[in-house]
Image (cartoon, rainbow, N blue to C red; front, side):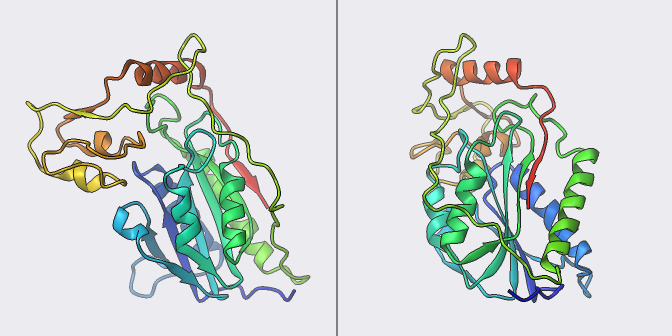
Amino acid sequence: MSAMILKPDKIYAIYFSPTGGTKDAVRLLTGFLCEAMGMSSDSGGSPYEEIDFTAPAAREREYHFGAQDLVVIGSPVYADRLPNKIMPDFRRCFSGEGTIAVPVVAYGNRSFGGALTELCMILQEAGFRIAGGAALVCRHSIADALAAGRPDEKDRDEIRDFADQIANKLNDPDGFEPLVMDPDEELPPYYTPRMEDGTPAKFLKAKPETDEEKCIRCGICRDACPMGSINEDMQVEGVCIKCQACVKSCPKQAKHITDEAFLGHMRMLEKNYVDHRAENYFL
């Protein structure tokens, strides 16, 4: 295969990111990739185009990319995999024509499990070529004590190095060789959340509640919900994926989950997974 052109026609930063961690990670890597490839914006804006895949409306359309595009595409890790309610959207909405892709998964300091492999497989099946992938540590969406401040300065240096390696790989005079996933590889099962005593934490039906005394009906939580599950009264009436988008976005701290199993799992995480976990890179 012939060597890639150093500068693709366009670079895209794509993310599903209910609480912003994945968005920040994808932006960071994409910015470093642009630097490594000598790409900038003459108008002073971003040298790449962003596609925020978080809102329901964004997942109702299809996105097709050509051979001269490069996409950095990211998702948070939920229970060691891609979010099960969103994974079909990744599979359905994106297609490429030999498009170079750099998949990213953001995990909250516990485990990224099979999420990166899953995203690589989906992209490969959709016509993308995988230049490399990264599992980056970001603050946990449920347990704020986990990975607070990540990516930190050391992480940023490592992400910059990874971007340089991707750029060098794309310009290898011997020809670019993508990572190839085995389509028959069996992915690990979804992680079972645990309580502090090790028993399963069953909070599938838990939903954020609204403190009526604090709520000002501003609609920010409704607009932030990636499932479109919050009604005009600011109540969660549909599917809840426990992403915490409504909780984190509320300017009055009027949203919270009181389910004891959910809170028990949060305490277990903060007890057992506060140690510094490494970023992971694959080329």
